[in-house]
Image (cartoon, rainbow, N blue to C red):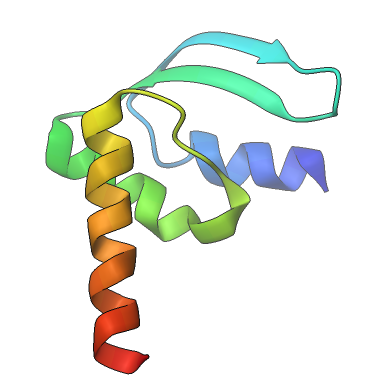
Length: 74
């Protein structure tokens, strides 16, 4: 399962800078994207299969998108 998630995540990035396994089995990655729009789009496509831990503007953008959906469909 972890390999499938890794393949999905890495298929949406431009370049991987670092890749480090965590104790809980998750994989922490630092990736490059074309621009902010590409980063937001890529992470949004992954839904619950990935978490943006930084930068804060990306976390905020994903939060705003999720909140807008809850408002619309809630």
